[in-house]
Length: 121
Length: 108
Image (cartoon, rainbow over all chains, first blue to last red):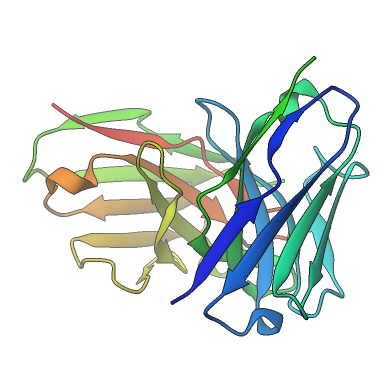
């Protein structure tokens, strides 16, 4: 059974940093792209970043480019999102999901339950 | 960036009725790379449709997707109680992936 489980959420001050992790199981991790999608309280879904199965290609939304970095460790079946220079508008539930497709053109077939990130002083 | 506009914002229907949800793109979506997701309160989204019309694993056949170019539709043929939720479309025709704003299907 495919499972993805996020961790690392919490409260952080504006300008601070946080790293999210996503542990994957039930599939061949290195053969699938992975992604992060976020949802601000009461709002819709916003794609954040994606990474190819090999880790050699990454893709980011303009809203996080230069501040967030996606990476993966295939030896640990784990996806990461390093978030720097956080802003209040980054407050959201962050979902990890398995991505299907190629060259950044992905849809998402399995989702985790999400990790809440709150940016506030 | 391709902007997706979903309509209506809210759809009020009774169980057993047919639901028709629209997703319009600001420019043509390459190869009909359009997906639909369902989200219930407090839950993660669930993939329903990919490639505009292919049902994901385990999705009942009352859910169907259609369309191409800039106009796409999700149809639920007969609403079941568990279908009342928010539905999002997502385009993956470019590497700047985008979601629509969502349509809430509520019980009338």
